[in-house]
Length: 114
Image (cartoon, rainbow, N blue to C red; front, side, top):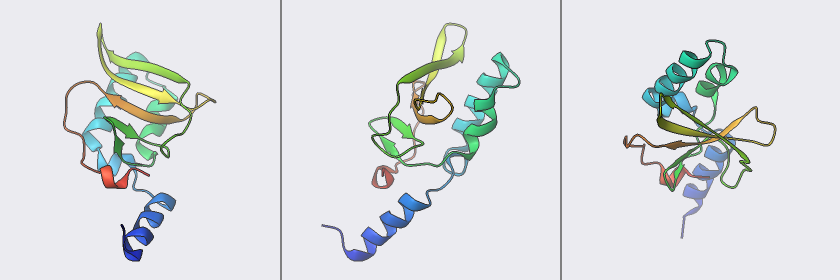
């Protein structure tokens, strides 16, 4: 059971989560570089750094609250090697989660998965 102060902290995180680039700068740099290699003007590459970080859950980096709809997934990589899977919301304009397939360590923020 969480004490009241822990619950207040989790509520504050849900309302104002850290930016993804502040928590996972190397991950964002790698994704942006791969997206730009394919399309220098990729709008996802322009916006992904500013997305909120909602934690890591089951190997996915969440950029939207847990349970957000993610009907579209695109693969990102080089050649035949897929490094990341980006999940998009129904409008296909917002990344909701990132599946990291290259084996890198993800931040241990399970307690922040909101």
